[in-house]
Each structure stands twice: as C-alpha cells, then as structure tokens.
Image: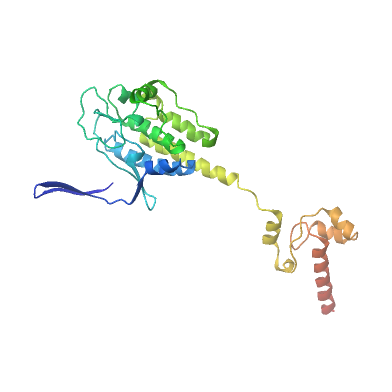
Length: 293
C-alpha cells in the first residue's frame, strides 16, 4: 500500500495512504477455497511483494490472508506492516484476526498464531524465512479453506506448529505435484530447510506457473478431421461439404474405376475424399477441355 504523506495538524497526527477498493484475501477464502490456478496468481504477486520488502531489510512478521488485499481490478497488495521490523520480531500473541499494536517483549511471541513459524512459537528471533512459513500457511488456506495447523485451542495450535506434519491434500483439492512440493518446502519446521529467500519462492512459483501453462497446451484436444479439411480446402472444393476421411476401398465400392485412385490422394484437398469430390473435378475438367477444343 502506498504511503503518500505523514503530518501533524491541530494536535492530530495523520497519514495519507492509498485508497484500496476490493476485499482482503480472507473474505474470498471464507466464500470458498480458490482454484489452484487463481492461487498461483495471488501467490506470485505476494512473493514479489515479499521480495521487495526483504530486499530493504523489512520482515512483515504477520503475513496472513487478512493482510493481503485484492483490489477490484485484480491487483494484490500486502498490507498492515504494523509488526514489521528491520530485524527480528517479538511481541504479543494474536489470537484473533484483528491486528494488535503491542510493543515487543523479550521472549514473547509475535504474529497471528495460526500463521506463526515454529521459531516464533519458541520465542526465538524470526527472519525473512518466518515470512515464508506464513506464506505457506496462507497458500494452504487458499487451496483448502483453512490454515494447516487449525486446532481447537491456542495451545493445540502452537503444539501442532511445532510437531505435526502438514496435512495431506484431499483428492478434491488436487493440485500439480510441483505446487504441493513448494507448499511443503515453505512449511518445513527448521528455517534452514525451507526456501531461504522470497526470490527463491518467486522463481519456484514462476516455474510452477509456466509448467501448468505448457501442460495445458500439450493436453489441448486436437481439431477434428472435418475442421482440418474445411480449413485446408481450396476454393474449388468449397462447392460441396467436406467428406469424412475414407479409405480407398470405400471409394472403390462406390466407383470401382480409376476414380478410386484419384480419391486416394485428392490433388485439390490433399486429403482423403469421397468419389463426389473427384467426380466434381472430373466434370469441371471435361468442360474446360471441351471449351478449349
């Protein structure tokens, strides 16, 4: 989100920020999980935003669907950098969706519990890799409708983040294997085992996106034979509809003369044709020959 100005006027401090029209990502997830292709579009935009922030030494510290805004024209914005710090993070536990503006206390927790990284749960300093864990939780919520370690109480959530494996996606939530592998790479318990930078994340997401597109092109159904014949016929064959592909024996049963040879490779259409095509051309050829004589 763009910050245009800050100031102090008549005893009131103010900031001037960009006006966004649309909804946060959580509102979309609440309606239904996103199709995986839509998830890729949002995830790629978020990775670019994280890369820009991390390049300036800023760790968000509270990345979650509520802090990702999708505008009415489809732009994706990371918002609410209220817990962002140039170094490591600490602070109070957030048990609700509302942001909390609490100064850090040594050894305490920072961030929204459902999207916290294990190192944040332990109270140890977080870094850019903690944002990548929160990104993985957010991606899981987009795909399934819920973060991966949702439990009945805060204590159970914290224990699950530290100990439990990432739940497997159901057949109804099937995604490309590369996307599921990327999800698990973001949610590894040890920071050194995850993707290390937002740049790596962006590159991996781009590879998954490009692979999905190329796969769709490879699996696109070929055009039917009639459509090919219609598109490749010369004008002289457009006087009658395209015939289905036929073997020479079929033509021979209709016209057991030399016409079957011509049907074998129609010089006009360059494809298998019915005897009618050849007969039409023969009549036209005979008429032209008589006129020449």
